[in-house]
Image (tube, rainbow, N blue to C red; front, side, top):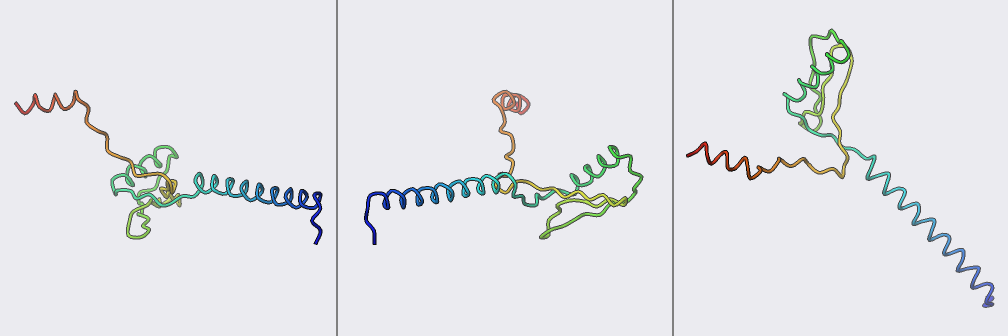
Length: 115
């Protein structure tokens, strides 16, 4: 086995390039996963009906009936009589929306109504 200085430098350079390429691949993959991977987002029946009405209004659809699309026992979309399908999705890393916190002014108004 050759232990010359050139051989050690050449081997280290190849190892360094391989490590850099693996890190670059990992970063690209992680970025793609976090920005593209999606999961079904549940809807209420009311939200599905509103989305169907918006579809009818925007497209000028003449459909009179619609069906709920379920995945895992939860409503995730609807299918219109015209053939249009809407499935609600969100990013996997997205958290569920939090309800808005009451402001100080609204709390004062609530207290004033109580008294």
